[in-house]
Image (cartoon, rainbow, N blue to C red; front, side):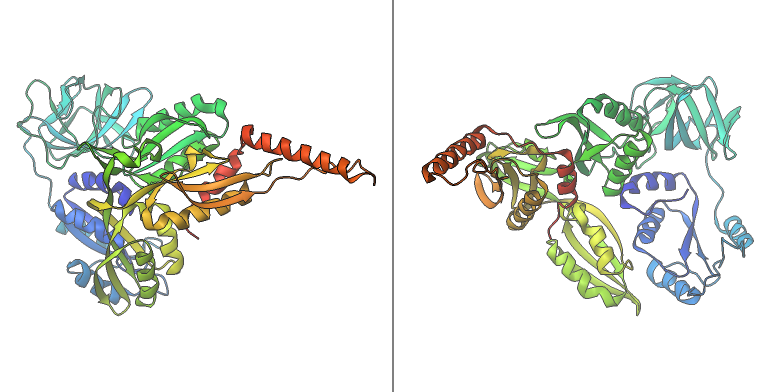
Amino acid sequence: IDTPGHVDFTYEVSRSLAACEGAILVVDATQGVEAQTLANVYLALENDLEIVPVINKIDLQSARIDECKKEIEDVIGLDAENCPCVSAKEGTNIRDILEAVVRQIPPPAGDTEAPLKALVFDSYYDNYKGVILFVRLKDGTCRVGDTIKSFNSDKVYDVTEVGAFAPHLQPKEVLSAGEVGYIAASIKSIEDVAVGDTVTFADRPAPEPLPGYKKVQPVVFCGIYPLDGSKFLDLKEAILKLKLNDASLTFEPDNSVALGFGFRCGFLGLLHMEIIQERIEREFNLDIITTAPSVSYRVHKTDGTEFFVDNPSHLPPVSEIEFMEEPIVKAEVYSPPDYLGAIMELCQDKRGVFKDMTYLDPRRVKLEYRLPLNEIVYDFFDELKSRTKGYASFDYEIVGYERSKLVRLDILLNGEICDALSIIVHEDRAYTRGRTLCENLKDAIPRQLFEIPVQAAVGGKIIARETVKAVRKDVLAKCYGGDITRKKKLLEKQKEGKKRMRKIGTVEVPSEVFMEILKTNKDK
């Protein structure tokens, strides 16, 4: 299993690790231990796995083998004295890894006589067989014709095929305790048997499920709309197809005055969001507009009720809100000491609270911060990489909700609220964010025959304004000399006309403008 380093997929990684007895920890000899490496090591240790450290890329000039060994011992606490040092590219010392696996990793345990207990660690949708479950059998056996069910759903299925991976699917007669394989049982939806669930017999179920299952909750939300309004059904079909293989993607229909019909989608994190957006564009050949990413806020109303809001448009009026809470993350940044100042400045700008700093060795330092999640979802990662020339690595986990002064920032075009550009921001940020958005819109909106005021407002109070100047039509072009009153009359008539246009004129904002604005929806 190649574990993705990104925090978005931590739960999937933890379920895959639960299916194993041991893990090979590959450390890049030029990079040393990185933030996401550590996150996955802790997951493996929580699942009681035997870890075999391996140092890779020893063929490179810049390899620091001894320093890496020391780092593995100091930072992770594993004995790396005799760990295999290999070059995967050139095939050097690969045999040592296989020997170490046989020597150090224990054989699987399990009771073939006990009722079936199988951990689902992955799944995908097959057009002919339905959902194929990737399972690790902890107890019991499973063969074609068995009737199975999962602990978290009451639906019952008949097994149509079982087998192992070699590496393609290889049907077998029976899977027994300790083995890893797949089960097909004409399951219609990937959500019916979720990753992390336990599969058992329907007629004689196991007494309790395997530990560790939790329902995955989306963390980041954004609106996805087709660039061409007539492609709404194509977009729906694309999202439904992606949903077949991705149970953690959530979506509901959404309607925006500015962008038309679309969907409000929930994702595990920023990387997950970018992957889905790119797949919709590439695999389904659709042009889409995505609104600014948002997180889920907890709103406490004056009548004592509380609920979650992820869409700025659904926020109740200020008078009904007692207070709001936002999700907080514990972030760890690993970096060379040269960039400490730049990282601390960035975290301070993002309303971070400094917690701890540890020197792992003279060339690496670990910083711990508490940061609001909504500050990370915009451009934190890009900013971190650019300020540290790409050397810093970053990992975070959500630790809970904290009370915060949050407001909804609305953008008004010609006095009308443009819902697609509304965002929830911290009170202290509202002015700078509003100012930036107004300036960007002023440059991006095509000029009309009348002036367009672009305003940023918080709860009815205008905090920033720019004006898109009118295009001037020369009404005096046909006058040659002559009486000044004639010219005045024409100018007055034009003025009246513009006034009337401004009252009834609606501002047509091309979709390219939204694309441009949502891209630059960051503090300058």
